[in-house]
Image: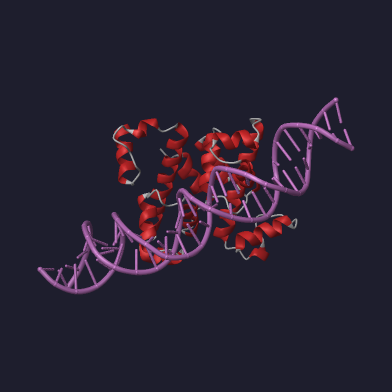
Length: 105
Length: 105
DNA sequence: AGACAATATGTCATATATGACATATACTAT
DNA sequence: ATAGTATATGTCATATATGACATATTGTCT
């Protein structure tokens, strides 16, 4: 699967940037992944800024530390649904959310 | 206002109890649902504007007509992931996407 | 160093999303 | 009205996401 391919490249030290011809991703696929990663990064930023541990935050969203870690790492197994719910729980506004999406690259 | 929103949710298949669970939604939950419905509406708009049938569009995204219908109806069974991928396939830009999210209500 | 907290990684049983299919309903034509 | 086309609705087997758990790794102290 391509998501795994992406993860492997990432693990191997490849920077997932604006375009990656090795992945043979369509523009839509690229945009989707970039958006998702931007949301993940935003999540991590917001949690750290609030000085909440992954364990504490996991409790807030009725999840587990490991899943929070995977969210923040952009693991392919996590859905945008969960990331968005998490961001909203952290108090992100629609405007901020929109900003994250529109500026994702 | 509230009644209108409730009807919208009910029409979309969201379970609303007789004790008016709608009023018990947290702001995060409300924001999440509103965003999702806004994305669904945008999807329908964009498809119709392009004059593509649900069948034809389903083929484009490797899905089925019934799932497209459910997406556009805001059925609770569809993920934001799928809606976003669909929107991107329809050629939505990150800016437009951001606009949909920030203006959702 | 060693202890301790935070985070990362891997696995697994269950819950949920998915495409496919059947069928119903709505909408246009002729 | 009838036929044809588009969309809605319901169900189901399978695929995928999920929380939980164990364990590993990292970081931060003294």
